[in-house]
Image (cartoon, rainbow, N blue to C red; front, top):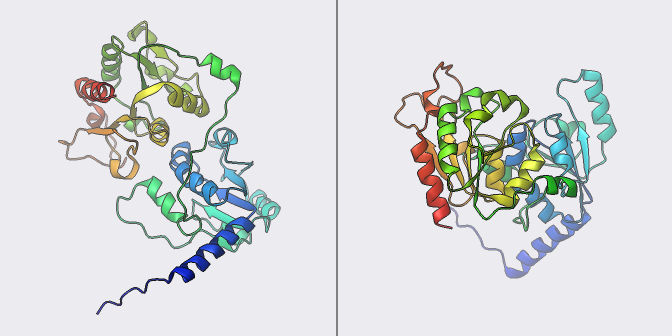
Length: 333
């Protein structure tokens, strides 16, 4: 026989909320151990927003990796950034912990490491974590901080860039902008190059098309194969620049499972996402009006990178499918 849950009396509920408010006001220093990679760090931004909403007066220190340092340095919700590199020798890691020991009242550890113990912080995120199967990574991070930061976020964090850079990235135009983030650190998730060129060149007749990517992606695309009006920014921007461009101009983003797709979702920009080896339930777009395109007729999808293919057919998504979804989104406002 199931036990009935007793409802709290109004005055009892008030006392509990009052205690929570007093607890939140007392907290002055919070340290957050962010994921190592950019993509996972972006997926943790909704959780950062929630932390800031629950502790608006607190100073937030971020533990960052060499990959995320420059990005999080520009976040307006983060006050201090401290670098940790997992490749350091043991002595340097010990020194890192001693320098931070007992200097914070709360630690949020997205990596689920032993840092709360090493830093001597009593209030911390749980060590034992159970998640439903195929739960989105973003929702996992939100679940981790649920008890520490129960109140929903009031606003999103921003990434600050200079006025000089804002002028540099001025893309003012009457036509709508379609951004492309079709490259990934894993070649298995890259969109088929020939199809990408076809898609961009067909869409650039009606819309402004901007291609984004990292410096190592330059060799993946030939400017001569792109239309003259296509803005090719591959290798010319950092992730904070991309934040500004997407926030300022993007009406829709065509992207593979990558940091650009996650950043677009965080900004609530509609995404036409292209999925192959990875599972969209865990890392797909969450912005409104987004769609997921896959080649679901393949038996090996998703392989989660376990299968090495010479011809990655799962990422050979037909351009007409992408073009159709982009036009649907833009025509619906």
